[in-house]
Image (cartoon, rainbow, N blue to C red; front, side, top):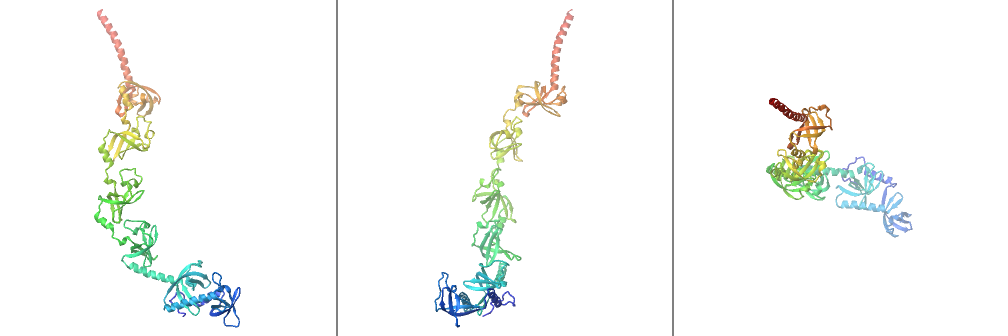
Length: 553
């Protein structure tokens, strides 16, 4: 035949026959001749074949043995042979026979000029090209048409290439992988063009699934459905919804010409539920949803129309101690929530569960009043005090309100989880803050002290601290009092030292405020009055008696 099957991708100067003959020479052979011979004699290691000459030609016995080592023929049998130089080969004759049968079959089907793609295994290589075996038929693929990467190892690998030449005379079948790849690219370009011009919904087969999306094939073209293009809910895990082999509806939504890459979308085949949300929902609306998924920071809730909203953990309960949404919710649970933020353009919806629940602070403020004695639990300890939880609300128990003993603090008195009784001393409704006191439940040392003494009583104390405005003295029972600078006279302020003992008179007492003020100056005046009183009392008696005695005389 010798007729080319298509316009192949090699220059006209190249001749396949030349390339093929060159490949034979590279194998150390010569031009092959096909003939028939008769087995004249069989010995232990050879068979002698009569091919019509005066002498019989030698054939290696391995040529006519099967895989078990048994002979395929006996003396007198005719067998096909190929003469390669001065050697005979039965196996090569079989290969030539298969090639002839292949060509005959193509001729019978009238497909000698129609392109055909062959898939086979690379079984050999020489300087001219590669030998490809397909179902026992050997094909020749010149290196220039193989389109393999340089230095790549191809022996033993499967390859698909296009049949570009058949030569019945020489028994040559020539393949071009380059031509096959070009035809694929051409077909893909044509298929892509049809796809991007088609605005209809198409059926695609899921081929591969990745965490960022899945590859779907439509009419022989593979494109990516990004994980953001699967559902109107937003990004989803493809493997949670699909399996390889699934058929899915898609639309073409993009094409990267530089990368020849098609982008598909599943959600584009469905009505946009966010348009429905825009028309039906407003901030403040109450809606029923189903908990679809939970993360450490919140839960995603299904609105039932292929859209999701987000419920942040801070919007689940007025209780600030929730560590994970599972403490409040379960997947699949139906709940009512309030819409608190709606951004249709960016497809974002935020909801709140706690806004539909009674506010603990408001309930607390209705139940308790300043001065009430209440039992609570220490929820946390800080350097400045402790937070006490009562009915789901926390209030501060400052260190100054823990004890009348200034050396004691919340950390020295309590541990987290301790039950404690406190008095409510302040409710800040505007800022939702509570203040508690523990020392308000017991009589202060000053109150007890004040019951035993009164203004003007003389007391003695030890100087505990010296300030610019006066000195602090420690009285009995650990009660502190202050002597201002102006009340120290006749003592000199600059001479007073910590640890000195000072005697003074009680000037004022304010037990509720925890204040006692002393005065040395007042004590001195009291002493002067007492001395003068005593002195004047004795002198009046003496003078009176003297006057009366004089008058009598």
